[in-house]
Amino acid sequence: MSTGIIVFGHGSRIESANESVREAARELARAGGLEHVEPAFLELGEPDLEAAVARLAAQGVCQIRVIPYFLTLGTHLERDLPRIVKAISLANNGLEIEVTAPLDGHPGLIAALLSRAMLSPPRSDKT
Image (cartoon, rainbow, N blue to C red):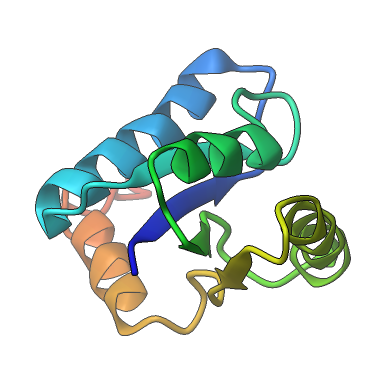
């Protein structure tokens, strides 16, 4: 059984923000040696979740794991995403679509924050 991965971002009017999500999907595929990885967006970016699922289904994927590229659980992940996933699954003959937790709570998040904090010395308030 082939599993596809979707990196699911909110989407932005700022195209470079959307491109960052697409790049994260490409990097995930490379780093994990994963063959079937697609980006998708809730709004303001392409492709949307339905189109990303269609791309993976066309590649013969039988199961999909959606990874929210969101820091915390909010309205979009709690209400909107489950509704969208259910509709897409039903439209695709019950295709199995699993949604993972957002990034909040993942141990790697603190390591990333620590890395950002150590990039440059703290600025002094002395002038």
